Amino acid sequence: MNVAVVTVGDELLAGRTENTNATWLCTRFDERGIDVERVTTLPDRVGDIARVVNEYRAEYDAVVVTGGLGPTHDDLTMEGVAAAFGRSLERNDEALAWLESEGGYAREDLTAGTADLPRGARPLHNVEGVAPGCVVGSVYVLPGVPAEMEAMFAAIVDEFDGEPRHREVVVADEPESALVGRLEAVQEEFDVVVGSYPGESVRITVQSPDPAVVEAATAWLRERVEEVEEVEE
Image (cartoon, rainbow, N blue to C red):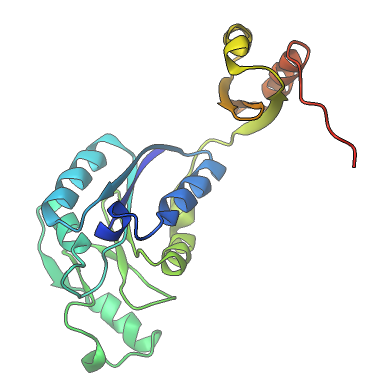
């Protein structure tokens, strides 16, 4: 399964708010063996949201959109998602009923538009806030507030199913440029994906769905690279 993550908000693009939602979602998907192939941040503009969601829903198994939910003037994500599907925004009675019965809100106290969702959307209830999310086709729309987003994602996480993956790390005490030949060779020898991440040392990750292959490839590497020595305290 592959997914695209879309985060919405002028404040993200201005650097006023750190985009922790993207990192959190990517981590959760990686844990489930799901490939995140795009992370895109968009301004609060209906046209941009509609264009990108429409493009990504045709290209990826699922699109997860966060941010810009609610009834205020700059909460435009639902309108953009509705436009991507050529649908109108309509009051969702299921979402309203949940807000009254479980959220404890009187209908007349809710700001107009709070429960407006794309026509035919499946509502996702917000147990940590007010504004509901929704699912339209393969597009999942979640709040931008991290606590709200994480709680809502927990309710749908089982809808994302990937291939289990296994990973081991070798830390090399050599320049990355000196390791190129051996990194190419281990991928030719074994059916693994290898990544290298330089810093004070080079972290080499070895990944495969098969734990035995990962173990064999890692052993092969350890015989051929100079590893960082552990310092005894």
